[in-house]
Image (cartoon, rainbow, N blue to C red; front, side):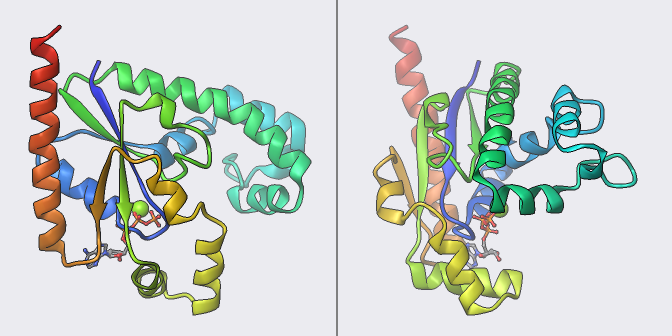
Length: 204
Ligand SMILES: Nc1ncnc2c1ncn2[C@@H]1O[C@H](COP(=O)(O)OP(=O)(O)OP(=O)(O)O)[C@@H](O)[C@H]1O
Ligand SMILES: [Mg+2]
């Protein structure tokens, strides 16, 4: 099994951009958002439970989960949100472990936006956090999603704040420069991870 480096950071902090740079170095990427979608695909036990709980009305015409509707329900109802979390969290954790176990590369990058919020850091061997000044995060979020400043501020405010986030970090990438500066940081971390693993393995 590979060594698992969790890559996390606030919305629009640069997770996808940084994951892409690791991928260019040949590092496999596991994406928590993709796993969260896989476990409720048509035909899964989780989708069956959800349909039983909320009725067929929660499905789109093609039989897929109506995520927009579900989001609205749980956003407005703590009881339903808890019910859904209790159902999905163990299933997601199990699927994540399964995908980890299939890896053969020395290490993999696990992109997981809600690492701290969902208490998932125990699944990782190391945590790599993105540090970005809030003004720049706001600017990039507004430009990428073409949304208003007030909505972007609200989206950032619902997340764990940067100081709390960084308290969980083993390593930090500062994303306040250009892409070249990111690439240099990623190259250095890549070398560091491979070196750490070599040292670790030589003692085992
Ligand atoms: N160093 C950088 N220089 C310039 N633009 C950047 C840099 N890093 C990220 N961006 C841009 O900022 C935006 C947000 O980056 P990205 O999509 O990688 O963030 P994310 O953390 O994956 O966001 P989400 O939380 O929505 O998944 C994108 O438009 C990206 O191209
Ligand atoms: Mg992303």
